[in-house]
Length: 131
Ligand SMILES: [Ca+2]
Ligand SMILES: [Ca+2]
Image 1 (cartoon, protein in one colour):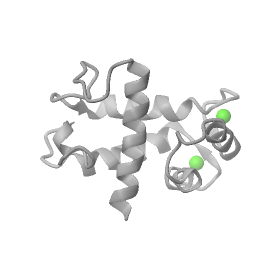
Image 2 (image 1 turned 45 degrees about the vertical axis):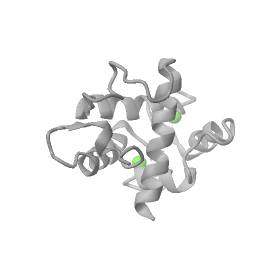
Image 3 (image 1 turned 30 degrees about the vertical axis):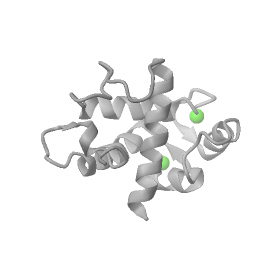
């Protein structure tokens, strides 16, 4: 179950970056979707940038209301469970997502995905693409 949710979240994330890069799905790209994989700093920066797009008032953190409004405006594109995703990232439970909290969550995910611990996550290590 946990893996399925992570898989969905990752698929959503990858779909977002693929669309952003304007490359066809499944094409190897220099920005990390291909065989070379992504390193931790790229992975963190990408997640942080993506989540911080919801920061409507540009105060450097994403409130629960900003998060909800962001995904409400994009039906079908958000995480499987936006409210649950918010709670998962909001480590101190103050109702705001900070860059530090986003990075901490992304670091844990990176560590889980990096099966051979070489510091890069390659396509074969991504749960939805390993078949
Ligand atoms: Ca904000
Ligand atoms: Ca917080």
